[in-house]
Amino acid sequence: MQAMYEKMVILTGAGISAESGLGTFRDAQGLWAQHRIEDVATPEGFAHNPELVQAFYNARRAQAAEAQPNAAHAALAQLQSSYPGEVILVTQNVDALHEAAGSKSVLHMHGALASALCASCDHRWPAPPELSPDSLCPQCQSAAARPDVVWFGEMPYHMDRIFSDLETCDLFVAIGTSGQVYPAAGFVDAATAAGAQTIELNLEPSATHSRFDSARFGRASELIPTWVAELIEGPNRD
Ligand code: APR
Ligand code: ZN
Image 1 (cartoon, rainbow, N blue to C red):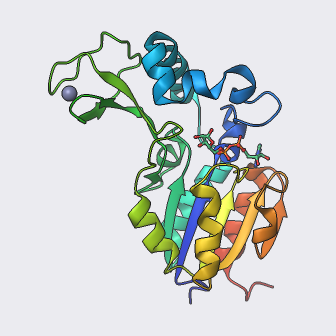
Image 2: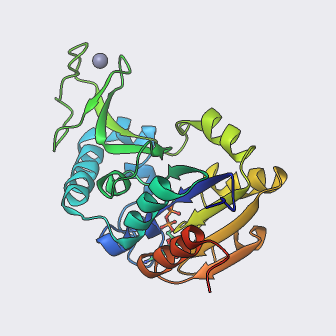
């Protein structure tokens, strides 16, 4: 089958994991309605009260470990494995539901709950279910373990790789993200500058909605499988 797109970049946000039972951030019951960002998602918050921050991520790690991927995660894994063009999957999410659905080489630009990071020697290792201020780094033995999650004010991961992919893609798709946090919210502009087609697939229009060529709205577990089926079956479907 001839690929309609040679290279697509897909960005996912908390909305793709909402139907797996993981909270989003900015919906009415979202995480930022329950916690202050500055208390639990900044280096300053971690320095001020490491117990609170470790407890916040321990709770999210436990919840994410119990969650199951939904049909949207499965559809993207199927797209990656069967689409003849290149499919780059970038996620802002720190859960492992894309991998659990079978996706490969997922670029976690905001880090991952399943990984621990040493604030002293930058060593990374698989996070235990719970991290605490006493958790020791297996490499340097210092009590400097922190969640391997990118906090506000820190540089997201894989930026060079992501922007070089955006500059050479012919389709950019944003799924389940409110478009309120940069640099991810600016990806649509980089793709547009590269001449790519841009699509927003979301429950409702995001803050960057007007910068997309087109959009479809609905719950990800219904919207994404339909969109993927159309891509894989190609335009010549009856
Ligand atoms: N299907 C599709 N989209 C959904 C669904 C669903 N079932 N439920 C909610 N959404 C949409 C919402 O309409 C919203 O646009 O998902 C989006 C979630 O937005 P946010 O809660 O802001 O999450 P996200 O965009 O991923 O946040 C980006 O902000 O706090 C930081 O680091 C954190 O990675 C996060 C970043
Ligand atoms: Zn260390």
